[in-house]
Length: 299
Image (tube, rainbow, N blue to C red; front, side, top):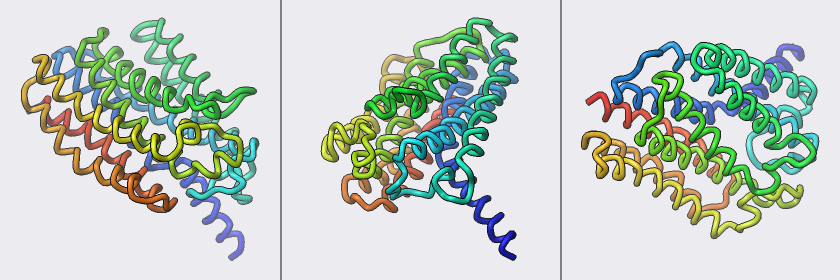
């Protein structure tokens, strides 16, 4: 019975360590990028989009697990207020978490290598940069996630690179609408991290983790969150005003009520459980954003 209980606990800890809510943020850029390819009537390699999805999901899992392991090593999880972390749980050894992160990055590398050799070998450089950035986010001698640069990492890699990379491997070119949607996806992906760092402000500061939130303080971090969400929903207006897509892209604004809920939560409370739920809702808002864009394009 004790063994069964330990196994169940380990399974739950592993599942929590994967941060399943954030996986929606990996699907969104691939979905948006594929919608751009459909809009451009240039979806010549749909199989490449599937490989891009594998890369995105594996990278997200790898970053989550690497962050889990590195934060444990640096003592950043000693006073954790969010969901339990695997390496610090006492149920799973830190080395197993480290190896799980390496395996996830390995899956991303294999899928990325496959699509790069089939589409454009120069993508190998992009892929290598992504893997390096994913590990050094909280790992290495000077993790930039501890220097307030985490938001830049998320915007660039889980916004621009993920969306534009999907468009490029499916069509072989990049257009203005691809860049705009990459920015929109990046804004919401960054908003997820801002919510995460708002929740962990006090414990991060105590552990010496200098995130953007600990540098700016709660008031200005909340302002950044509002600005990111507002910028994301300005993107469809720009797309329509520049005649890059029909008026149906304005359907993306049906996502505003979804995104407004976590923003209101962040403005109203400092409760860790409430901010955890807000983070999950923002991830859902990013996926809804990409889905509504896709519907607008198909209509």
